[in-house]
Every structure is written in structure tokens, then in C-alpha cells.
Image 1 (tube, rainbow, N blue to C red):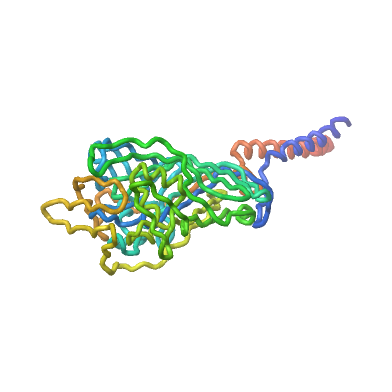
Image 2 (tube, rainbow, N blue to C red):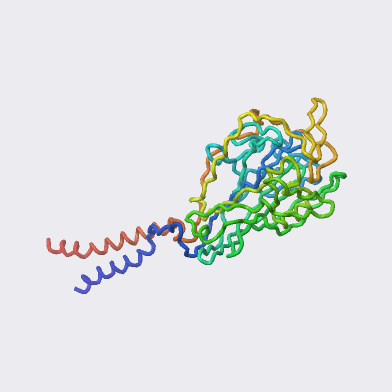
Length: 426
């Protein structure tokens, strides 16, 4: 008699033990939920600005981002070869991805993994034209794996990403690297901080090549980030402060021009760092024809990679750019490239360009170098940290253990009645 009651009781106990191990679908937070939460695979996305996706003024050179930290080329005045390597060392300098960092090209069909050939074409493969033509390569820096905490009610957030990306100007004549960006939101401000590093060179003496030590910088000041943005289900997109931001250049620097509708500057700490690198005037209005391309793009922060906010497709651009680049004050037009000699280096306002001419980088809108590979599909994986914000899938061993224990509990429950029925048939 005791066994008859013991077995169902044991089955019930096992069922209660198994229940916590069997994954269940969690509730998904909706817009407006101000409950604090943590993130484990947040995504940082930034298109930098149009000038960093543009045809450069020195003939045959371009401006573009790269994943990872570019290795030291050993000397200044170098231009990456047609496979994104330093000609002096053969080391790979340009990368499409590195760790959690990748570079995406935003096309009319959506984002795709980029190629080195894609740094020299428009969103859908069209020619970039001249440096003042409004067609850009349209790349964005994307970093996954961000971890941190968000408290919409308090209006605070801290999310950290690990990884580096490099911004090349003039195909490598000057560049800098940004490492480990951090989102910092308080009730009164929001910004992206990071560490900047690079190399300072001299245009008068290309043998000069000195490392700039890691420097804390404010990469972007964000506007309009408050409780509503932090309580959004997927994340938020915020404008970056640039328009109307004043900058007082140091002695010997290019004076900021504060006229027109696009004058402004990136944060002062970033500019102080870029002054050491030798390319600060490309990050504030300096009076050149490319000033309107320096305005920084919005930053997008998604709470989880699997539900990340997708970028908007590019606005329509001309298939064949028209118009001739102007000759703005302080900027010389690109010289024609003779077939028997390399082009002369043109000095744009600000960056430390070498005195000797680099070898031109061959590129056309339709030609593709032998190293070109078409974009491939890829998938994202994530490890969410909060069930209120994202799906918790459970580990495989938990599923297997839960199933076996549940099956055992059902067997025990049915065992006693079955044995009694068998006894009655004897």
C-alpha cells in the first residue's frame, strides 16, 4: 500500500524538479518598458561621414574604413596596394572583418560584407567620380558583442565593445585607429568614447614616422538620447553633434570656417588627437569644397545582434557622376596622370602628405581586381543576458536532461497501475 502512494509522489517531485530545466519562451519587452536590463551582444553601427567614404584629392587614392588595427608600415607616404597591403612590408593593412568588428557596404538591396574593391565604388558599383561628386562608397563600421547595463527609468546606460577599426585617408598616406568604443549615457549627456592611436608624419620629410600613443577621445557626442530611446525594444539611432560645433584650431592650424549650412566640428578631444596624426582639418569645416561631406553620421545601438536595427538603403545616386570637381580655396584639383610617370601629390588642407609621389592605384567602375570576391551571406549569433529583452534558447544538455527526467517521471507514474493490472490477470 505504501509503495502505491510513494510512486506517484516521487513522480510529482521529479516533475517539479525537471520544470525549471525545461526552457520556456520568455516574455519580450515592448517599447516603453522602463525596467533596467543587461545586454550581452549589443551592436554598434556607424557610417562615420561621407568624406571617409570618398574619392581623395590625390589621384588614384581613396578614403575608407577597415576592420582591425592597421600594422605599422615602417615609414610614411605609402599607399596600399591593390590587395590592401603595405608595399614596404607586404603586411595586410585593410580587412573586411577582425574579431567582433566588420565593415559593411550599404547597397540598395541592404547591407553586404564589403571587399577591398568596394572601397573604390559607389553603393551599387558605380564610379565615385571626383572628390566633390556626391557619390560615396557607403561603408559602415559594425561591432557586435557589446556588454553592459541599461536603465531607461534612470536615463543611464553603459555598453562596452571590444575591437578596433582603422580609418584610411589617401589610401594609407595618413590613418588612425579607434579601439574599444563605449556608450556612456547619463541624464544630461550621451557620448561614444574610445581610445585613438595612429602615426604622425611630416610632409616635408617622409622619413619622419612616429607613433602617436593611445589617447582617450570622445568619438561622437550623441543628441536626443533619453528614457524613450533607452526603453525602445530593439535599440535606438541618435544624431551625432557636428553642425554648429565650434573649434579653435591651435597656432599653425587651419582656421575653422563658420559660414554656410554645414559648418561644424567633431568633439574637441578627437580633434586634439587628430592634430597629432596630421589630419584634423578633415574633421571640421576648413573652407574646402568637401566641407559638406565632413558632417558625421548618426550612431545606431541595438540591444541584441539577432534583432539588430537594419540601416536604411542609400538615397538614389547618379549611375554616371556628372560635373567637374571645383578648385576650392586651399585645395588643388587632381593632376592628370601621364602614362609614363606617376602623378604629383596634391596637398589638400591639413593632412600630412608626403613630398614624393605615390604609385597610383588603378581602379575603374567596372574593372575588378583578381582578388575581388563577391559578397557572401553570413549569420549572427548572440548570447543575450536578459530574458526580458531577448530570447533565451537554453543549452543543449539542459534540453536533453529535462526530456529524460520528464520521461522518467511519466514512466514512474504509469508503472504502479500497470503492475496492479498485470497482477489481476494472473
